[in-house]
Image 1 (tube, rainbow, N blue to C red):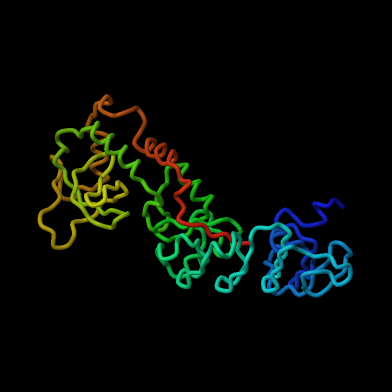
Image 2 (image 1 turned 135 degrees about the horizontal axis):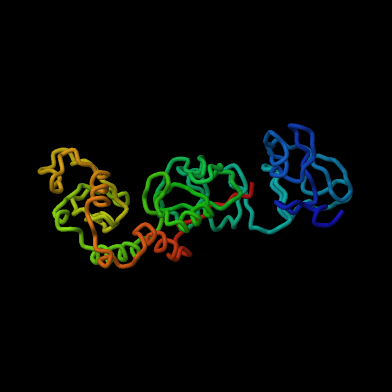
Length: 313
């Protein structure tokens, strides 16, 4: 048996295997068990291990009682976790599991109920038990996931890989609340330039709409433009159409020959089917959606994460 196979698996390097109390089978780690069985291994219930050096089956402990082999450089008796690779592991009593990255680099937020980077202390939006949910993209449980989780400004956790994959396709908004997950200032400046170079047809130049900004949560009355509706408070184009706020004076200006029941879909249909726009007025031949995808995917996200959570469970 090769050293690589004998001492560990693709998930952990260790010199012992766990004997699952649920089915009595021996697996190197709980991930290997869960991949093969139709049930999950609750690792904290494990009370026996199998030494991979001398084959001795014994109670959970850090070293073999027969040959003296140290099962792992890191051992957590609470989590029944062994690891021979230094990942700066530490056990968090608040989270109830082991995390990696160094205890000095994290603090446990009692409201979010998760370990966060110290750079986020007193500088993050608390959401009660934020990690006790599934990733909104891949639906894997975030609290016990072995994948790094990203915490955007809105506080809704998402796997860091899922976050990066979203940006590659131009999806910059939180899948849960719709708020921008990174600084979009450069993108909005580019949209400003495109809007300025693409004037609306004359019959739509006085068409005002009411919008809600998903970033600053303020409402504005703005001139309609097919490329985007800009928030008058923060300058974001991450907005959506709304009804008139209660008690507001005036009503939406309607385009010629449109009834009071005209909706955004009707306006967009009219723009597509009845109104001809000179292609030379647009900055390039790509659609605004394609441009946004490219602009977002080109953003530097090396400093975008507010913090990462990474379990070693």
